Image 1 (cartoon, rainbow, N blue to C red):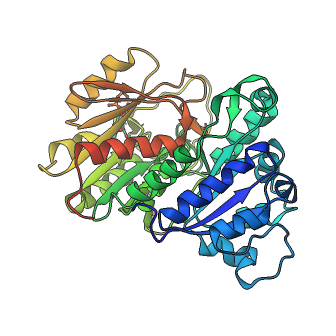
Image 2: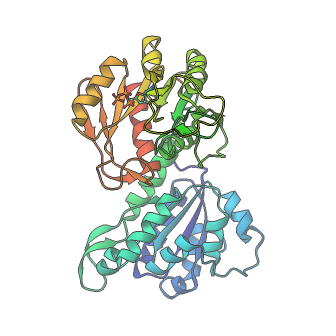
Image 3: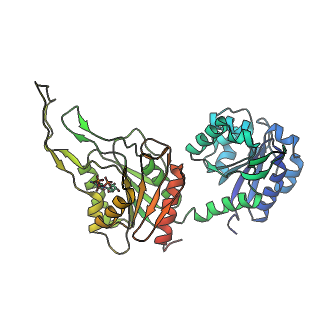
Amino acid sequence: MRLAGKKIILGVCGSIAAYKSALIVRGLIKAGAEVRVLMTPSATDFISPLTLATLSKAEVVSSVHSGASWNNHVELGLWADAYLIAPVTATTLAKLAHGICDSALVAVYLSARCPVFFAPAMDVDMWQHPTTRENVARLQSFGNRLIDVGEGELASGLSGAGRLAEPEEILDTLADYFERRRDLTGRRILITAGPTLEDIDPVRYLGNRSTGRMGIALAEAAAERGAEVTLILGPTHLSTDAPDVTTVHVRSAEEMYQATVERWPATTDAILSAAVADYRPKTIAPEKIKKEEGSIHMELVRNPDIAAELGRTKTGGQYLIGFALETENGLENARGKLVRKNLDLIVLNSPRDAGAGFGHDTNQIQLVDRNKVTPFELKPKRAVADDILDRLVADKPTLCD
Ligand code: CTP
């Protein structure tokens, strides 16, 4: 059983859909999970704590001040393997998104180190309201996982999107998470991310707008799924403190090239998401360049191509993924790079797509290999990372675990 032995916190909010939480608890217990239930005070108007306590075989907490030993919010946050909030109402969604900690349910959310799943339930107009859309996106941008609403008849009599996902779907989502969670065990994955900066003189450089967000999301997702990850990161304000991710900071394309190429032989897979500068100034002026009359010319020379070098030296078992950020002729250019650099897969995205590319929390990609193109919807970068890793596992199943 995929949920056997897992420690799950179920947070229940005050929605008519709260009655379904009884089925969720029963399903979890039947699957062999250990369950602790947290209720917001208004949830207790919709379903009795006694019902959920009986089904979960444990005391239910509905106040920050309840006193049993396991219900300290920090302890509980550390205890859990996953925190599922179902149903979550528009109000609690807003409180979670902004850290308004007026219930045990939100306090545990802020203390939890485990993945958090949230399954909203509300009326169609509330669900579509820009405030709700923004709160959902904000929660997702923190790495929390949305279990999307269903469509159909709503308690208000209206019809549309807003129903709590069915309990079976919620249980399946959790079980899928645990099943694939360690599917990269035994793999050593090298990830390049961020921009490279090419110095002109002691105070100036050539750079680009990459933040490294996509590569960091990939590193965190791969580590969470059991891989040993080395992140070769160009200069960016972002970083990760995820355990099992070793970060190597580099500045220029040449430094990134050295750091990556020397680690490649001991690597099972590489994902090259860095925006590597193609050119660097031929010489770096030792002193700050002073302005003169008229224009100046700077000679630029080619940087080494990391992807092409890894592709050239790739052995049978190694899998190599590149990125292509294209403003025009995306597929044609991506296929060209795939072949030229001997990649196994290329992640194509366009800065022209709303919400995709540099600086966004979301991305919209197509996965391109020699035979097919697989398009994906616009998603948080963390979910995009899992799509890319799912493909890696499908194309090259791991021998371990
Ligand atoms: N790449 C790399 N080293 C370089 C340039 C690119 O490793 N010096 C990698 C990128 O990280 C990416 C892939 O190659 O995974 C494609 O990058 P891109 O800049 O789009 O490719 P280029 O070959 O530089 O093509 P273009 O002519 O579009 O600049």
